[in-house]
Image (cartoon, rainbow, N blue to C red; front, side):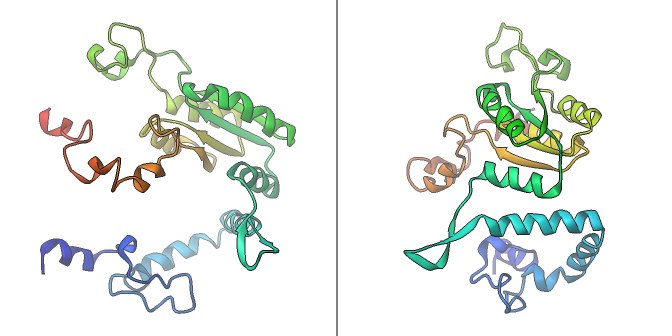
Length: 241
């Protein structure tokens, strides 16, 4: 047995589960490394958090909204069919939770989408605070970005500022936040520093029209370079420094 195979047997690897059962009454019949079996103590510790009334209600409403996302259609009466968009689910969730003030953080490249989103949310009765990623206009040099590392060297470029986005929404007292198109890593910093719980409405994928799953669907065809190490920009940055 290879070390890699041995390791996979020792830690949870749900992505390779031969026959998922955790969504059925047979949830204890998964493979040997199934976390339902091997991480029972961790799961029990996590479940204790649901006893917090606020967490319990948040989780309950999320499950209710999940169910409302399906319907039955005459031509497939025995199979749930999708009924709502992501945007409708966000609105429905916020309404059910009784939220009044929403925060929207967006990449400057999504300003047109934000211009559409915010009035729609306001039409549904929410007060909306929106903050662009370039708030503050702070030059990238402040975080050590070299001129040759800019998008367009030789020009002034403001850094993305997700911590300030988070702190502004914190100060405004937003009940719930919505992320739209923040860069990889910048979204992580926002999520780490935001006080209110946050959902993601859209993620950025510059090449694929903000549909990152297309890279997976095409990973055996047009994007098969993803299956070969060395073809991703930045992969060797750590080794070279």
